[in-house]
Amino acid sequence: MVFINLRWSSNMHLIQLVYASRLVGDESVLHSIHSHAVRNNTAHVITGKLLYCSGRFLQVLEGEPAQVHRTFEHIKADPRHSDVTLLMEQAISERAYAHWNMGFRHVQEQELEQYPAYKAYFKDDFSALQIQPLIALEIINTFV
Image (tube, rainbow, N blue to C red; front, side, top):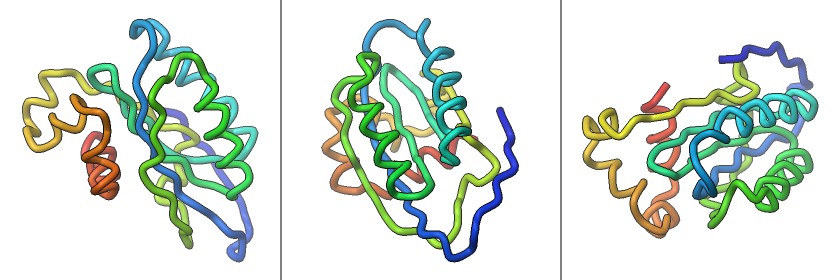
């Protein structure tokens, strides 16, 4: 976990964007994806959390709209991700993940067994998450 100290104006417009995607390749690239996210997010004052389980990602990004959208475009173009699906975007008054430039959690299959209601979200084509996008944030926040 990497902690950063961010300072920004209280009148700065912020957004929170949540997406899901699939991993292309094997899990050996997870460290590279996370370290790349930490570098980029630190440089662009983006905070958030990345959750990985069973070949699927759920991620929340927070920051100024232009920076978050630019980051999301890079993710969509990243060959390590496929089926990148925007689940939710909303204006926020403050960051929920201000202490993480990119928190990361690799959830193991056996851990997911403790949350049977969430298992389906890591098995389908993300359509259930598109219908109920707040579930994605609930899942992300469950695995601290």
